Length: 339
Image (cartoon, rainbow, N blue to C red; front, top):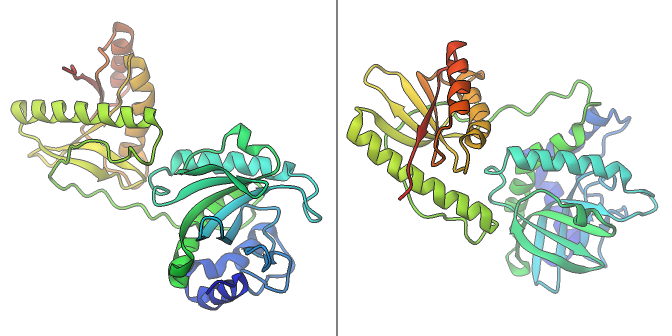
């Protein structure tokens, strides 16, 4: 199947039984449109270009668009979402897309793990100027015209699996909704939370970074240091306490807790590991996460919330945490000496 129209038609036919089949209905509610498009890709419109081998969802020119395309030089088929930063008859100025890019970046910052299965690449003048990378924020230079910024997946042209395409597009609906809803969305419910409930399970896995091929070097270094800190911390806790330990425990309200200690009393201690040079930097990063894990709806109230870093605790930071404890927040700091 190498015809973009045939692929688009196959997606349209399968979509009604999947989340992506609600796209046009969602757009109508969000944007208060008078009419709902009947299909995702309307092959009678210019949004489906058979000659060049691409298509975006009906009405998507001024949006982050659900996009499919045949990349012939790369011998692959792409499917996902994209920003097309190039003026056209229907979009004379890309200015309306710029605040949407800011919302895209915010979504990426807060949903990095959920986007891990996807990749990003950037085109300009029919050439890829930035090859496949892990999902990341869109940079200022990528916003220069004419750019085509894509997030999604790609498979060989001979291996197109329409059901997989439909499922993948559905997985990106929360991103589309966040980018397009904005403060003007009226009466459109948020997507239901898919957070896993807090459920302690004993067992800790500590290893080298598994992201060296997918993330920038500074992210790799941070993960390696985190693993070192976790290893030393676990050894210390096992020798000195009766805690049962489990790592990467779902918080119940989004995210995973780095390390959880389960006490015989049924209480829990939460540990958040933050490699840092100064303790105040580790505290600044870890504190909001720990508070959310323990106090936001859906979370589990912890006995102690512990920030862990290789940075020594300075007096000012110690005083700051003491003030928080005096106000009823069980915040503590654990220094781990790296050898």
